[in-house]
Image (tube, rainbow, N blue to C red; front, side, top):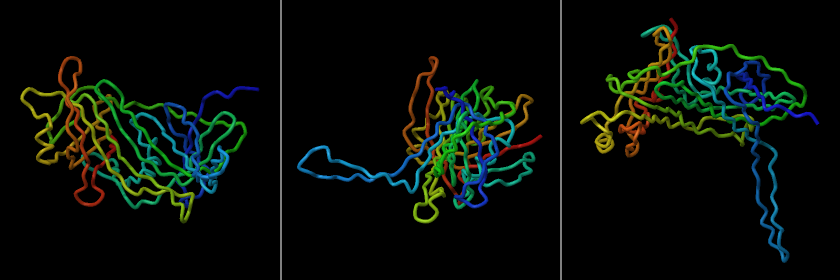
Amino acid sequence: MARVLAKAGVRVAVETVAGTYQLPSEVLKIESAVMPNAEMDTVDIPNFSFFGGMQDAVVIADWAVGKLDITTSLYKGLSYYETLFAICNLKKTAVTTPYDGFAFTPETHATKTASIDIVMPDRKFKYQGAKSSFKMSGKVGDKISLTFSLQGSYVGQDVAAQTITDVAGDELMLIRRIGGMSINGVEINMSEFEFDMGSTINQEKFTNVGEFHLSDYAPKLTLKTRLESAGSDGFDELASGVSMEFVCDLKDTEGDLIWRLSIPKAKISKQPDYEDSDGIFVISREYNAVSTNGDDNFTLYHFTH
C-alpha cells in the first residue's frame, strides 16, 4: 500500500452561524504538522461479577472534541492572524496613535467561532465551532513564536486526494537587541519573555454541541531579565503587591514599530527565581495581567507605515 507523507495544512473560516460547519478557504501559515484528533466522552461500567475481567465502557459518540495546537511565528503582516485573533475573543479596533493601525483587546462575550480543515495528502479532518487561546514568546537574538491552542467539535473526515495552496513569505519579527521592552517606561535588559492569554474554553453540550465558548481567561507574563547591580529582583514587589506597566515593542528591519504588546497592570504572582545564564544572574518573574476596568488586561497593537 502507498504511504502517506506527514504533510498537513490547515484552513480556517469564521462561521456565519456559530457552531455550524462552513467550508474553510483561508490557509494558515504553520511551522509543523497539525495532528488530527477527536476526544470522546466515555462512561465506565463497573460490572461486578463472579468472574473477573468484566469491566466495560460506553463511548458517547454524540460529540467529539478536537484539540489542535497550531505553531507559527510572528510576521510583519496582520492578515495571517486576523481570523485566529477573532476566535481568541480579541476585538479589533482602528487606532491612529502613535501610528495608524489596529488594537486587539479581549472581549469576554464575543461569539465568533471558526470551522477548521486539517488537510492531509489523502484526506481532510473537519471541525466546527472552534475557539482558541494564544501564547507569544521570544528571546533576544531569536524570532517571536506564536502558538494557537484551538478546540473545536469534530465533524468527520473526507477521504479523497487533497490539494492546498502555499502561503507567501513575509518578514519575521525578531528581538534584535536589548532595550525593546520596558517596565514603567524604563527599558529593561530582557533575555526571554512569554505571554499566555490563558483562556478556558468549553463545549456547549446542552444547547449547540458544535459550538465552543470562552468561559474565562487568565493572562500571564513571564520575564527573564538580567540582574542589575543593587537593582530590584522582584521579592519586594511580591511582598508589597505593587503593579507595573509592561510594553513590548517589535520593529521591522527598517526600524518601524510594527507590533506592540501593552499590559497596563502586571502584578508579580509567584516568588521570583534566580538562574545562571552565561555566567551572570538572571531573574525569572511571573506576572498576572490584571484587569482594572472590564476587559483591559492587555492590548496587542499592529501598526502600518
